[in-house]
Image (cartoon, rainbow, N blue to C red; front, top):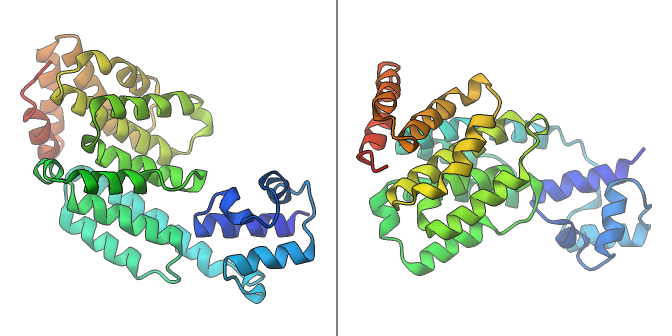
Length: 281
C-alpha cells in the first residue's frame, strides 16, 4: 500500500506545489515522482528533510485530513457558485464568496491562490476597468495565471483565464485557447466542472474575437463547443455557441431567436452584454 506516497501527493496538492518544488532538491524529481506512485521507497532522512523544507511537522503529516477534505468540498461548492456569479456579472456576490473563502482555515497557499483569483476577477470584471490596467498590472495577472504547473490548479487557472481573456492580445489569447483545445480532447476523461470552465473560456474567447474583428479565429472554439457533451450543466454555454455559430454563418435572424429565448428564460443581463457587440460579424 502506497501510504507515504499518497500522503505526500495529497500534501503537495494542498500546498499547490509542483513535484519539483515538493522535492526541494532533497531527491531528484524523477525519484520523487516514483515515490508518489509507489514505485520507489523514500529514505527516512530524505522524507524528514522534505517535510522540514516545507515547515511540516511530522505529527501534522500523519494526522487525519478530515478537516482539509471538508475544506476542499467547501471550496468546490464556493467556486462553482463563483463561476455562475462571474458570468452573471454579480460582483457583490463574488465578493461575498471571496470573504467566505478567506474564512477557511488553514489558509494554505492553494486556498490563497483561489482567493486571489476571485478578488482579481471581482476587481477587473468590467471592460472599462480592464482597459485601464497598467502594463505592470497585466504582467502580474498573467504571472498569477501561470504561476503553478499542476493539475490541481489547472481548473482554477482556466476559470481565471476565461474571465480575464481581454487583458491578452488576440494572438496570445488564441495561443492559450488552442492549447486548451488540444489538451482537453477526450471529454470522457474530463470532469464536469472542468468542462464547464472550458466552455466559458471558449465563449469569452469568441466574444473577444468579435470585438477584435477576428472572425477567422473563432472556428476552432466554435467547433470545440459543438463537440462538447450535451450535459445539462453545459446547456447555457452550448446555446450561446449556437448563437455565435449563426452569426459566424451570417444567419442573423436565427441568432436573434436564440437571444429571445435566453431573454425569456431570464438571462437579460447576459443578452444585454452580447447585444452590445452590435452583431459585428
